[in-house]
Length: 274
Image (cartoon, rainbow, N blue to C red; front, side):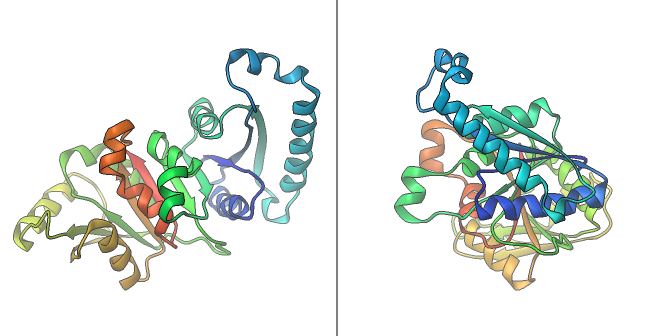
């Protein structure tokens, strides 16, 4: 967790994320890339190429520079190496591109969540980044004066396709000295006997070198509620999941449990792309 990308729109939730990123950077002797995207009122390459010649856009850019400078002077960033990035681009696309360009180990984002029609029709840049980013995304929902990952819930079906992203889960929990709660959520629509579910979890975890963990089978009406209820029952610090990054009609009809958690969980959520 040496290279941390933090997008900001100067909202309080974005600052919550920056404060957490600062704590992680200090713990790991890391650096922060603070990113602000100026979304253009028009689209297309011509608008991008002429952006720096448009007085109105330069006004907004200069205002953003001033806000970033003020933000970077915050006391909680003392001792943290930090670079600012301002670009004219769609927010979620710019965030993903910068994550890859700067070889980020982690993206930390704030989110206020969404519900109902707002969630269905509007979505959020955070959801889009969670869906598309190959870099793990940590979503912060509230101010965390002392960020902790001591109790880390990782919910999964523990299939073979999870093994690759799980390597990053192991790296994360080892960095933070977490106790890893491996949770298999049993639902009426996808029921497994305790014997079968336990055997699958045991065989999965045998592929990894990790000592501080426990396995749990939790029954609930659906996966999302099961994760939230289990996390609450142990007073978890953070919830982790892998995501397929579904797009288009597949995403519309199937949805994404990771994105639902980003919207509905009060605890920090971290996602790992399959």
